[in-house]
Image (cartoon, rainbow, N blue to C red):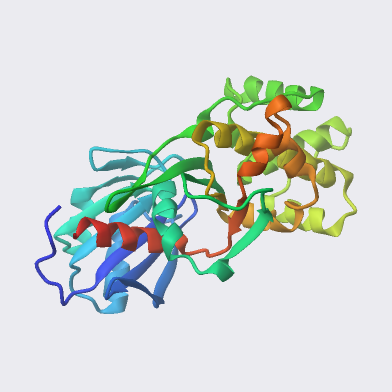
Length: 325
């Protein structure tokens, strides 16, 4: 990538989720958190109008570089949003920002690039692991509007964060209730994927299924379900919470065995943060470690929650900094 022609100009970073887009300026290599703005995606035909509106509001005429994190696959500089009807290209970002240097990353890749920039206070340990953390791979797992994960590897002079779309892998079911839930997903969607259970919409499907099984069918938003869980007086919400944590622990354990993140697993995303008070109740840990003769081995992988809602913006800034060297 070419170096910016105007180093006096700020850079722009953006984190585009299925529901909201966060935008900020980068000055001196650091995200200026006072400049962070959040835009609802609904009502916008694409990313370019959001970026143009942001720069107009900030009274910035152009940017030295721009990096955006996108909740969807990126190929050859083109991103197709998984849960939003937007297509994002380097050309559209460049036209909206005037940036000479443009990068489009998967959102979990951005989260991975942010790990070395995070303040210790923004990490909450859920599973400390039985052994002292050691150098090695790390793994970021995103649970929000969708589900995805990305392994993070240090290489000489750079960070390698591999993209994936593992949220669309088959949901690993083992119990009778999980099998019945998955069968219901298959009838509606033709396929029971991880994201169909472990996401905001997944929690809504789980709750609806639990109320159906109880003979009192009801549908609620994910936020309302979390309120019911906190209240502790809704058996369907309690069952949905237990199933969600069990499935999350199992999927996280499977991913840990694939990527061997001895330096830590990091949960990110709004749904992951909402579940933080319940991650230590033993349900997630039991499912995470339920790997037969490899159960003890699972203690090699500490697990934390990233509570910094703007970590992906830091990751975009880090990627721009690395690409400039």
